[in-house]
Structure formats: C-alpha cells, structure tokens
Length: 470
Image 1 (cartoon, one colour):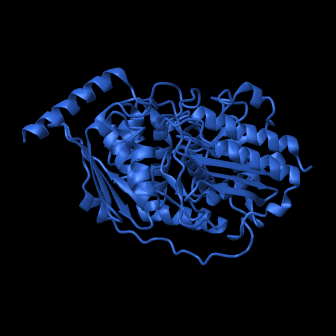
Image 2: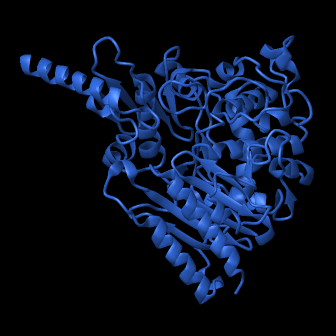
Image 3: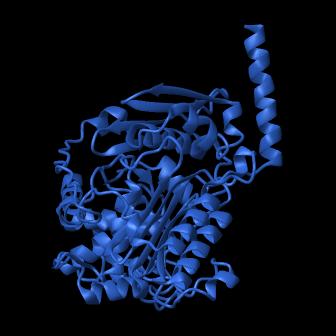
C-alpha cells in the first residue's frame, strides 16, 4: 500500500510539473484527454481494425500528454474502451462504446452506456463487392494508365510521404494512405505497412465536407432549402431564427465559437463532455450578423446534422438511412459511417470513418460537379454553392475549403489552379480536388506535424498538374 501510494503521489507530482511546463497540442485538461483517448482507441481498433498497442502508444499517448502518466485504460475488444485517471476525486472517466455498423460513441456525463446501447438501430445492408474498376467497383489501381514519368513521380512523392524524418513519437507523420485518381480512374494506391484497403479511417474534419455533401443531396432532393432558415425549434422567436442553411454551411451563422484544441474550449467541451452535441452547440450566443463573419467550427457542422435529423423526422435511424441510401450506396461506399454522439446525432463536424478509397469517391463526386454515372446526386447550382467563395471568406465555401488559401505555403500556392478545393481534417487528413484536371488526391494519417503533411500533399498535387498527361 505504501509503495502504491508513493508511486501515485510521484505520478501526480509529475503530472503537475508537466501540466505547468507543457500545454499539449490538443489535451491539457483531463476530461478532454480521457474523452479523446477513449474515442480514439475505440474507433481506430474497433471500427478500423488497427492494432491496440500501436494506437495506444504511438497515436494516442503522444497526443494527450501528460495524461498517460496517470491514465487507466480498460480495453474490452468488440465492446468498449474505458479511460480514466487515478487522481483522487477527478477521474473524469470516459467510455466509448462500439456498435457494429455505427462505430464508436462516447458516453459523457449526462448519458449512460445502457441508454446508448438501448437505441434501436438497423445497419445498412452491405452490397456484394464488384470486381469492376474503381470507382464503380473494387478493382485495383490502374497503374498502366500512368506514363513511366508519372509513375516515377508518384512513387517519389509516396516515398516522401511515408518516410519518417524523426524518431520522436510526438513529431512523426504516421502516414496511413496516399491515393490518386485521375480522369475518373484510381491510378495510385499505397498504404502504410500492415494496413489494408478495407480498413476505414477517421477523417476528422473532412467530415465537415461530407456533411456539406449530405446537405447538398438533401437540397437537390427538396428536403431542405439552402436559402431558407435552418428552422431549429429552439431558435424560434430569437435572432438566430433568421440563420439560413447557406450561412450555416459557410461557417458564418454569427454565433460564438472557440475552436481551440489546447485544453478546454467549445470544441473539446462539445466533443468530449456533451451527450447531445448538436443541441449544445446550437445554444452558443449570437455575436455578429449572420452571413458576415467566418468562424470555423466543429460545432456548426454538428448543428447541421442535428438540424438534418430534425428535417427527417427527428430519429437517428432516418438520417443514417438517408446518407447511406442517397449518397453512400450510389457511390459504392462500403462500411462508411459518421459516428453518432450519445443522443444518436451523427457528429457531422468530426467523426466520419470511411475507407480511403471511399473518401476518394467523395472527392471524385465533387470533381464531377455532383454527377455520378449519369445520375445527378447534387444539382449543379447546389454544387456551385458548395465550392464557391462565401460572402464571409474567400477561402471557404459550403463546408469545403477552396483557393485562395493562406494555409498552403506560398511557393506551392502559386502553382495551384483557381478551381482547386479540398477537405481537411485534424492530424493530416487532406482530400484535394482539381475539377479542371479531373484530379483527386488523398492523404490520411495520424500526423503530429500537420504543416509538413499539408506541404507534402499540395506539392504532390502541384507536381501532378505540372506533369499533366505527358
């Protein structure tokens, strides 16, 4: 007992010292740290099929420092993950539960594991895979479509993306996938060692763009009017009642939001401590005229899925069925899901988990202006809105990033065309689309040096454009 008490006291002292010296990139408070760790471990092992020890020590521990000094993890394969701290009175336990077909859901205060598991759910049927070439089927990359020079160029960029330049865990790139589609064909596909095509990967904020595409399908189907107010009942009679779908999708609803990832913020509070994330985010106060101020927010994208769910009757099954049937099934997307919060609402700002080849399909849909195999999934005028500059920011459209973009290094930016748009996600997720070139490039990973990951992928895009079809 004395020895255990001494060890825990020493660990607590170490935590205090580390907390004073280091404000980790994402996690500086225990509730966010335990929530992040539980959800990360659950999604990457249960939904993606990754190795538990690799996810725990190489992908999660470096991100939530100094939490590993005091964390306790209970890992129940195929069922759930519990993460807590052993600091007396402030364990801040978070549980992520796994449900086949839905992925993982975090259970924060105000929700119970039993309540989450009691939610009725019927997974979408999984169609038989087709042997046809991508994107129609599951055929391999058509490398023969590349010239020798193009093949060499892609091999060089692939080597650069997958080669680590440091042994320090907190600075590793951890690239997982690098894929390229050109002229509607998959021409390059590479995964990290021990990874496979059939493993869905967390897209983090690329999910915002996926949410935008779902809104685009709903607008095309007449299920929502982009120019009309979002219409949340809790906004009735307030100034927020005037917020339109376009303003919400432009990240300009006029509401307050702190997207910071260092310690407590609106983003971490919502993701890791709120059972009904969309409803909570919808309560942020109005601070500017809707449509005038760009304010990037994971919360606003989750407000969108929360409102979509209400448009479809309020049930979590209805929205799941809708995006599976009206977007995923036509594209041939298999095993894809937007993980829900404890209330059943898909977390539209952060929790899309799709195979890399399926993220690439979403990019191809954008490259084709919403058209797919002779079918209009997203009407041209709706797609034009999604990729056009918003009144509040030239760098952002309808939950989709676009040119011009100051985040891209200037030397690379000058080599990129004006119609380039992209999805971007936490820790180095980039899906880059150049419609004029019919080019789609995807890079996914668990990167602790996101700026390097961004530079690498946009340099690859620039070089592919320069290479053209020669």
